[in-house]
Image 1 (cartoon, one colour):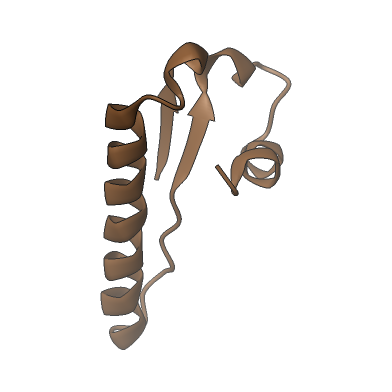
Image 2 (cartoon, rainbow, N blue to C red):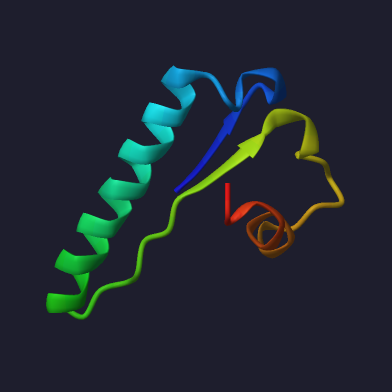
Amino acid sequence: MIETKAASAMADADVVAKRDAGANWCLNASNYSKKHRGKVWKYLLIPHDVVADNMTLRGLAEAYSGS
């Protein structure tokens, strides 16, 4: 699951809470999915201003997976 937010709002309490909820949803979905031979879910929050034609999902994930 990939979510973009305004770069200036990345540390806002609402954005952090939504990030945590999204990451938790992905954890729960992954745990369920493992029991049914499904895929692993991951959450990625990225600032809007880094999205560009020359960026790949892999590149974004590597740069922002710790966000």
